Image 1 (cartoon, helix red, strand yellow):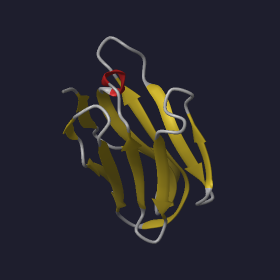
Image 2: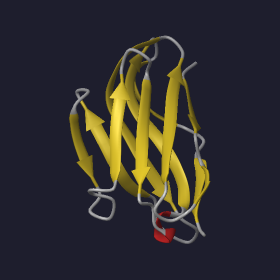
Image 3: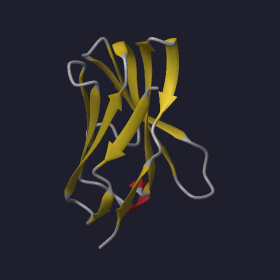
Image 4: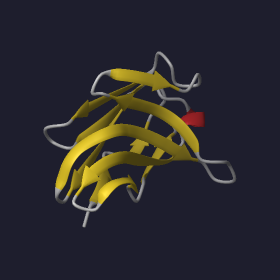
Amino acid sequence: QVQLVESGGGLVQPGKSLTLSCTASGRIFGIDVMRWYRQAPGKERELVAGITGGSSTSYADSVKGRFTISGDNAKNAVYLQMNSPKPEDTAVYLCNMMLFSIFGKRNYWGQGTQVTVSS
């Protein structure tokens, strides 16, 4: 069984920093794509950032220049460093990985971690 577990969420003041982590466990042979999504109450799920091949990154316009995604394939982990967060960044953040395991190539989701940006 493959599981993704996020950590690092919580309450953060505007302008401060927060780093989210997500680690995959199980019989994993490799990871193709790592992504962070977020979903605020009453809104659609939004792709925040993605990383492929361990180094090619992409970001939503709303977080470009403030958030940084990074991955560690040796640890089956992906991180999201959130610098200068704004109240509108408040949401449940979910990690997503397209990975290879004994079950083949599949898409997996974490359970989500709440991030609240407020003074």
